[in-house]
Every structure is written in structure tokens, then in C-alpha cells.
Amino acid sequence: MRGGGMLHVAVATRAFRRYSTYRAATLAGIFTNSVFGIIYSYAYIALWDANPTAGGYDQQDAVTYVWLGQALLMTIALWGGGTTDDLAERIRTGDIAIDLYRPVGLVGWYLASDLGRAAYHLLTRGLGPTLIGVVVFDIALPSTVVAGLAFAVSLVLAVVVSFAIRFLVASTAFWLLDQSGVKVMSGAFAIFFSGMMLPLVLFPGWLGTVANALPWASYVQVPADIWLGKHTGTDLVAALGFQVMWAVVLLAACQGVLRLATRKVVVQGG
Amino acid sequence: MTPHQPLIDVQDLGRSFDVRRKVEGRRRRSRESVVAVHDLTFSVDAGEMVGYIGPNGAGKSTTIKMLTGILVPTEGGVRVAGLDPSRDRVELARRIGVVFGQRSTLWWDLPLRDSYDLLQKMYRIEPARYRQNLARFVELLDLGDQLDTPVRQLSLGQRMRGDITAALLHDPEVLYLDEPTIGLDVVSKGRLREFLRALNAERGTTLLLTTHDLQDIEALCDRVIVIDHGTSVYDGSLAGLHAQGGSTRTLVVDLVDEAPPVEVPGATVRRVEGPRQWLSFPADASAAPIVAAVAAAYDVADLSIQEPDIEDVIRELYSRGA
Image (tube, rainbow over all chains, first blue to last red; front, side):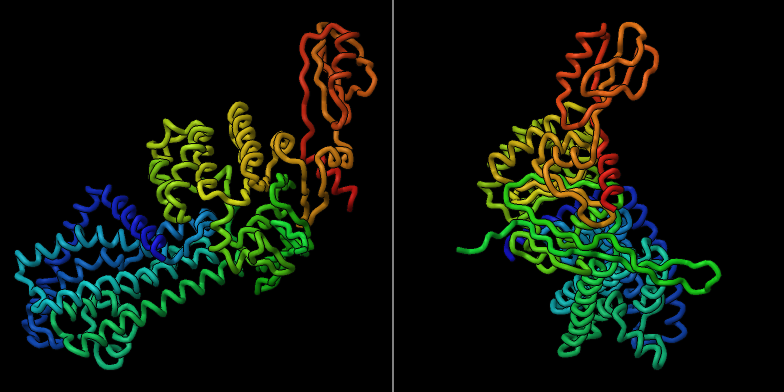
């Protein structure tokens, strides 16, 4: 495992470097996130003026939630994409065969790569909007060290859960040759059920219950609530446990799908 | 005494795929099973150099995929180095190397050296052995000036040599080569073949080579397995293949002046076009006496020899067998 660990660090580092070559795109992205952050902030301010305790959030919580959402958007690759797009492309062209000839598990390899990507996006597309949120909208920071550390852990888990879902979406290319239809559909689910569009705490009744149990809740709602200090003590452990549970289940599903693919389908080309 | 254990052991191997096909006049698509490989049996001993040939779609890459474990057989069994490839894919991957003429296993955006560093970690190659292997292959394959060049900027020949080095750094017992010389110029082809021969001689690496280039086979392989329609139709020496397939080589003679069809023993004229004539003779016969006989009797401006097309030989072989 020691050698394997070193390999995965090298893979992550390489992905980080690869993404860091797109500087102009990064700056444009930060600008876009900030514009959306400002628009959403004013909308939420109006909403919480009308109902100052909606979903158990006060107005500062709500605005903070907006900027966290913008910061997480690219970090967790909510729309899909990231290194799993490379995977889908390699399945389509048949280059996936080369990945399968290597003495490394495919899931771990791509996960390491995606974590490297996420680290880059966190430091740029994540940190950029957060700073603007702090300066312009005076958003809340984690009130305790525990909340801050737990947020960091939760963030990594959010990337892992999102990665696993994107990996499953990309794997559909084994059967469909192209992931794009499924990717669009999955992106629509993600934006709704992650709480990106509207915090899940505002979802009424059974819809709220269901949304909070689905894996997408790990994307934005759970990390944001940890940041805001809504989870403490055993509740905090349960929130992280929820993310761990989905991460394990979905990564296992990735392994299963991969096994099925080598059993049932043609890997394209020689 | 333990029984003799071949390195690659293929027994009654088969693979079929379910495909759905639209049938005229029916609303639902019907399921159909397409057989890619069927009833395939062969074994390869350590240190052999085997040509695995057949026309496009014969089942060559399907076989290689099963030998390397990325495809699970639907019938029969495979063992490579005592392992079940599809079950022990990751473990087996450490002991084999794969080279594709038309695909790179290197990372497009990385310099060669960085790709190799990644491979060292991936295969957990001991640092001393890694340095030694890298130095040796870089010298033999003349890659010294390219080590810091990103793969996307390499020429096809350089990339190919880079890929071969990548496949060998971990001292694989078996090297699978899929069309390794495709697209290379004559000099590069020659150098590559020479390198592979030396590799086999020095390290005893087993080579399994798929190719459409008969000269690859002639230069490297003592043994040829021909596959067609998913099953083996010939397994033996190259000379034997030519004899069985009744294949011919062609001597193209450019005479100084136009002449009636030349008459020399052991060859027959197939075509005449002005001063140029095409003579065919059995592929396992030597060209030397025929060339000598032609040169002795006629004024010859130029001579060249065309090798038989392997696909023709196989087609001939198959149509007889069927």
C-alpha cells in the first residue's frame, strides 16, 4: 500500500498541475461565480427579509450559504466533468483498455486524479468567491476549530461522493458509447438535490426528508451546515457518517459497474 | 517432477457478445449472439517469439484482451504465468507489458521522463533496477534527447520507442505487441526488430506479436499462429505456413528491351507490361537461382522482389480448410 499511496499522490499532483495551466479560464470562472454570488445574495436577502427564520437560517447564514455554494460548485464539479470526463472519453475511444492493462485499480486512480483537480479548484474557484463574500457581504466563518476541521473533512467527502456519481455516469459510456445525455440528466438532479439552487432546509415535508437522504445532500447542504455550526456533537458525527456511508456505497457501485463492463461489453478498439 | 507448465495456456477459449439488432418489420430489436473467438486452444512456452496473425476482425484483439484479463471469456479457460487473467488482472499486469502501434500508453502532456517516473511508482520498480533498466533502454533505443520532451511533440518513431521502454521498465515476462511497426519507416522498423530480437535473446522475454507486416514475422518469429473467424487455422513455422498456403513471391524484372515472357526454371511469368515482367515462384524457395538465371539470359535493368501478402496466404489457407 505504501508504494500505491505514493503513486496516488503523484497522480493527484499531476492533475493539480494540469488544471493549473488554464489560468485565464480560472479567472473568468471566479468572475462568473462572484456575479452569481452577488445575484443570489440579494435574492436571499429579500427572501429572508420576508421570512427571517426560513429553514432555521438567519439572513447571514443564508448569504453565507450562497457563497459557500459558489465556492463548492467547481470544487465538487457539481455539473459533472472533472477527470471523469477524461474517463468517458477514454471509454469512447477505447483508450480505457490501456488503463485496464495497468496494475492499479481504475477507481482509485481516477479518484486520486479528481482529488488533485478538486484541490486546484478549491484554491482558486473556491477561495476566490469566498474572499469576495467575506469582504463584500461579511459572510460568517466557522465559529469553532472543530467546525472548521469538520468542514475540511466534509469537503473531501463531498468530492468523493460527487466523484463516485460522476464515475458511474461516465461508465454509462461502456454501454451507450457517450455519456453526455446521462451527464445532463445527472447534472440537473445534482443542482436540485444538492441544495445548490435552494437550501434543502427550505424543502417542505417529505420532499425535504427525501432530499436530505439522497447522496447529493453531501455536495453542498452537509458541508455548509457544518461550516455554519448547525451540526455539533453526535449530530456532527452523524452528518459526516452520512457522507461516509454514501461514499462507500457509491465507490463499491463503481467497482461493480467496472466488473460488469469487462464481463458484458466490448471494450472499443484494440 | 512437476509437469511442464507453459507460460500462456489457452484451452477451448471462446468469447461471444450479445448484440441487439433492428429487424425489419418488427418493433422490438432482437438479441443476437456474435461469436468473436471460439474453440481456441494453444500454448506458448517462456522465451518463445510467436506471431499471432489473421485478417481484421478475426479475433486477435479479443484474444489479447482475454490474455491480459480486461475481457472475461464466455467459454474455456486462460492461464498466463499460472494466473487467471480476469480474476488476477492487477497482479498479472505487473508481469506483462503491452505495446500498441496505434495507441500510446504514455501520458500525452508529460515529458517521457515523468511518464517513466509514474510507471516506476505504479509498478513499484525497485529504484536501482529502474535506473538501470531506463539507462539501458534509453541507450539501446536512442531516446536520450527525447527524455524531456512532452509525448505529444514526439515523432511516431520516437513515441513508439518511448512506448516500448515504458512497457519494459518492470521486466515483464511476456510482451504483447499489437502492430508495433505500423506507420514506421524502413530504418525504424529494422531497428525495432533488432531491439526485440536482442531483448528476447538477453532477457528471455516472451513475445506475442500481432501484425499485418510479414517481415515482422520473418525477422522475429519462429512460430506463427493464424486465427480466422475466431479460431486457430494454423500453428507452426512460417515456412510451413507458406507451404500450406501455397503462397508465392513475385520477382519484378525490368528488362532493358521488351521481350517475350522470360523462361527460367522454378518461376512462371504472370504478367508482362512493356519491358517489365512479373515472375512468381514459391515463397519457400530461394530467389537467388531465379535471379541468377534471369540475369544470365537477359539484359536486366532492375530487379525487385515482392513478398507474399500474408492476408492472401491466410485467405487461401482458410478457404482450403473450410
